[in-house]
Every structure is written in C-alpha cells, then in structure tokens.
Amino acid sequence: MAEKIVVDARGSFCPGPLMELIARLKFAQVGDELEVLSTDKGSSADIPEWLNKVGHQILGTREEAGVFHIALKKMK
Amino acid sequence: MSNKISIVVVSGERERLQMAGMIASVGAVSGDEVTVFLSMNALHYFRKGAAEPAPPEGAFGKLLEQKKAPAFKQLFQSAAELGDAKIRPCSMAVDVLGVGAQDLEPWVGEPMGLTKFLSEAHGGQVWSF
Image 1 (cartoon, each protein chain N blue to C red):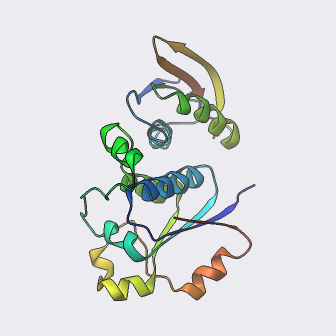
Image 2 (cartoon, one colour):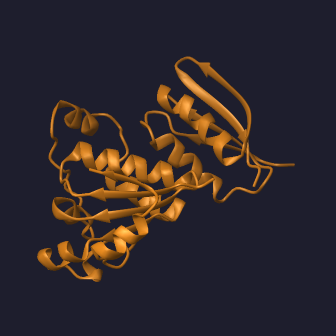
C-alpha cells in the first residue's frame, strides 16, 4: 500500500510550491500518492501543467477555504 | 521533447535575479536542458554564503521580500540540484572579481568562456536578465 505524502507549501509563492513538491517527489517511490497544499493561485494552475508535461498522474484538485489541494501519483 | 535554454544573468537587481531563477528552476525540473551563465553584477551573489538581499529595482522587488517568495539563490540551487541545470560563472567575471572556484557556492560549476557558452547556446532559446 502506497503511503500518502502531504507537501504543505501554504504561504509560499510561485515557483516555491512546485519546487517543494519536486524535492519531495525525488525521494518518493513510483506509485506513491502525494498531495500539495498551496495558497498560491498561480501554482494551483501551474503544478497540474507541470504534472501533465512530466507525466505524473493528477488524482484530483480542489479548493477549500483558500487552500488549493492537488493530489497526484508518482508515475516514474 | 526537451528544449535547450541558455540564460545570461548580468543584473544585480532583485527582480531580474528572481525572474532568471524562476525560469532556470522551472525549466530545469521540466526536463529542459538549462545552462545559466553568470556575469557582471550578478556573480557577486553566488559567492559562498553571500546572503544579503539584492537591491530592488522597483516596488515589486520590495514586495518580493515582504511576501514569502522563494529566495532567488534557492531557485538557482533547486535548478542545479533538482533539475541538473548547469550554473556556470563567466570566466571574465571570475577574473575581474578575483574569485576562485572555492569562493563560489558548491552548486556553481567551473568558469565558462564566451566561445564555449555561445556554442552551447547554439540552436536553443537564449534569455537574458
């Protein structure tokens, strides 16, 4: 069972949340699920763009009380 | 398909260093082949331990410091460590400033001459700040 890893990047501005995610992804296993928390609206659009470009799976995105949650699965 | 992105950074102003670091880091972690060429007023900030903030060019630069934007130096380091970007000081700037490899951050590579930089940049995108 893959672990769920939370990357809490709230308060950081672009490209901080993306960099925090990538730093964490390096140490994750293929198949692991991660969720990024970000308060930066730009990142909420740019992180899915990056995931599509690089080839990781987007499991879902939602906004809750000003916090964007981006869930993903490491594919490679 | 990966792009080749060459970024020339000569400015010592905060906004320009920040934008250059943003492009370098995001490009590098997206699979692009990034080379950053540091010269003129920019090189000083890549000395080991240099932590003083670069002076802002305008109001936005002041905001960058107040808000929690990633430090530009951190962005270049992420580009090198997470995305294998090559961060290379200009050999002329290294000579003028009188710095050796041991004086620069460990993720900054060997000095590069313009001839080499121009050959590496050939056929790719070139950005300058």
